[in-house]
Length: 65
Image 1 (cartoon, rainbow, N blue to C red):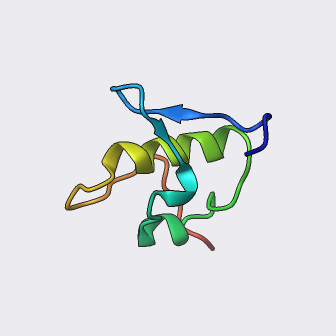
Image 2 (cartoon, rainbow, N blue to C red):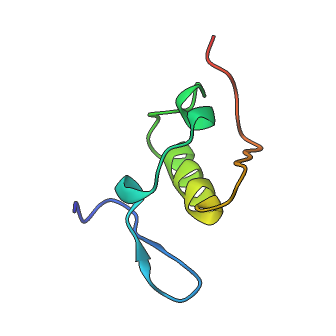
């Protein structure tokens, strides 16, 4: 892993690897998908937080044009 990339941890202190968190269809259809920086961090945290939930919801979602 690149030392410049942010690291993510769950509430128990276990490291989360964003590449292993499934990307919901909603994310794939979002115009922010693939952006780096702050948007990438927000997206990774949102996906990690809702992993395993029946329904995925994202307040930052914007459909691709």
